[in-house]
Amino acid sequence: MIDLELENKVVIITGGSGGIGSACGREFLRQGAFVSIVDIDKKSGMLLEEELLVEYPGRARFFECDLTNIDSTCSVVDSTIAVFGQIDCIICNAAIFHANSLKNWGKDDLEQLRRHFEVGILGHMNMVRHAWADCREVVAAALSLSGQRQDDLQSQRLWLTCQSKRL
Ligand SMILES: NC(=O)c1ccc[n+]([C@@H]2O[C@H](COP(=O)([O-])OP(=O)(O)OC[C@H]3O[C@@H](n4cnc5c(N)ncnc54)[C@H](O)[C@@H]3O)[C@@H](O)[C@H]2O)c1
Image: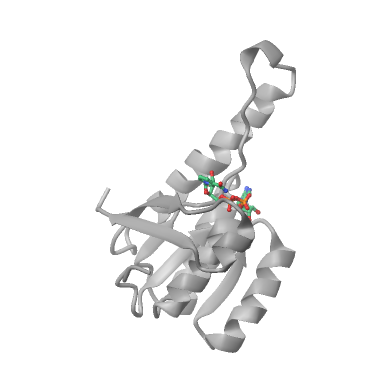
């Protein structure tokens, strides 16, 4: 696994309760980071926090957040700083995916596509904007997977490349 140079860095991971987000959280903790798990899925997030704190006391926190809600998004940025003192990196991972061919386009598709962009793009833009003053470095993350199944991810066969640049 590549060294992401995350020793004592504070990382927010959106969509961190499950899937790729939780796999990132585990790996970042293994590499010495503090992890703020941000997700709309409270049940999975709380369970994950409980599990991670056994191995990494004081290094992981779950914060409930709906990225389509501006106040909720700003609040988790503020909470992360209150708990961990800083933000070094934000992994914009949360998504809901909607795709349909235009020939099958129905009356619900526009609303679902709107939510797709609200979570994946606008929510993250708002989070980064709010964190800007406190975030040392905004990270654009490119995920490259060796396998797509969750058990592949959990078994550490996740190849992660992180391109770090100031946006
Ligand atoms: N799984 C793949 O094969 C694959 C391949 C390429 C890219 N990706 C991308 O990687 C990312 C993660 O994929 P995944 O398969 O782990 O997805 P996933 O559906 O398992 O996880 C997405 C997470 O986002 C959270 N989320 C959804 N709506 C939210 C909201 N409004 N506010 C906050 N959190 C919300 C969900 O609760 C969930 O925990 C996505 O951006 C996806 O597009 C996935």
